[in-house]
Image (cartoon, rainbow, N blue to C red; front, side, top):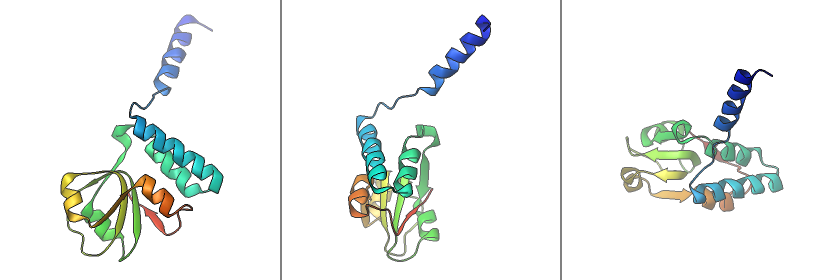
Amino acid sequence: MPTQVRVLSLAYEKMKKITKTDKHLVNLIQEIKEHAAKEDSGFWKRIAKELSNSTRRRRSVNIAKINQYTKEGEMVVVPGKVLGVGELDHNVTIAALEFSESALVKIKNNMTIGELLKKSPKGKDVRILG
């Protein structure tokens, strides 16, 4: 293999190996992956994959969008951040990695993704938004 090609392939390998520095997030992803394997849940595998994305690719959702795409009493998971733009005119339980301060003021029923994992082990009746 020519030297130039080898250097490029080594540079590419280093780019692929990005590690998370947030220990809480790493532990959450690991817990979700183990749970998904144990329960054979494609839903939780998808959430773990979404949380593994880089910060730039992680989802952010406004309350207006949650209000538009949900019905009364639904559970929603956002594998990213919930932002406070808009109003929520019905009761929805929202689980997310992060909430903005303005979103926390507007949302009555919020929880972490880890809490949702315990509440809905199979991921039934939970919608992914983002």
